[in-house]
Image (cartoon, rainbow, N blue to C red; front, top):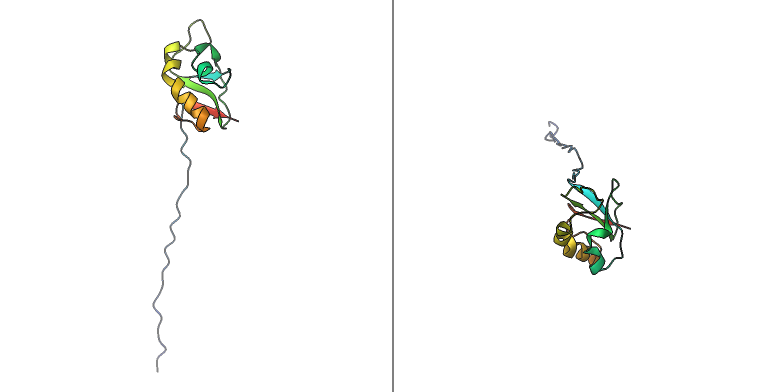
Length: 106
């Protein structure tokens, strides 16, 4: 009697490369330096142009805005008005409403 032959089993191993997608922010970063209240978040004078974005966290930290300050370190009030509601909502929820624009910190 001939031995029973087992079928060849081929195992295909797929190796997937993993990579991280990094988002690049555009515009000018303005660090928030006021009280964490709706009224204060809506004031342009509470934002100062900064080279250093914030480390991640649960509190509102600052925003990326398109305006280049001319003669001042503060953004244009109209741009702050446009993000103030989302910034305040981010602070209340502990999570950025728009992670392209609004940054949070510890």
